Length: 203
Picture 1 (cartoon, rainbow, N blue to C red):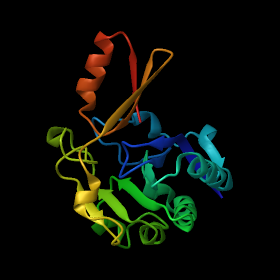
Picture 2: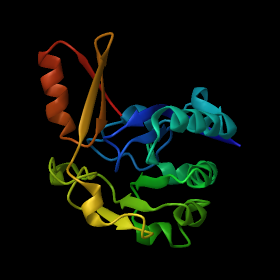
Picture 3: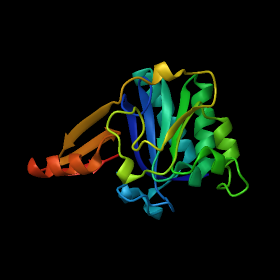
């Protein structure tokens, strides 16, 4: 099976509790105004990657970094639910936690209208952050949420609300490009980086 992959970060502390591997998928039919990663809206076939290769990278990353968990972002993860389910199962087999964002609400994902495989992926998740990003409701202080309408759902007893911790954000600079992980006010980030002469690229 293939996954349309946008980016992988082998170890980040900005995409959920502890050290985590994070996958950003390509393809999203929601297209929230002000989205931090519009470059991942298009399901560009150049991103097609074998799920087995991603799982191998997960094992290597865990061996190197002693990960706490795996996170899924995008793009829209639930539009590739069947492929991500296999990766989530592999993460859990390693004892890792699993977390995903979705522009769809949990109610929608448990309805007959949900994308194919949504129920199967939900069963493999410990945490879901749901809801479309609403630019007018942007928040810079709520952990893991871009806007105040979004909700953190604890689908298992792996974590409690206190385990989520404060909002975190990390930045890497490579060849004049700012690679950012986490949740922040992306418009202000872009404006600041332009003043510094760098090109922002949020993930």
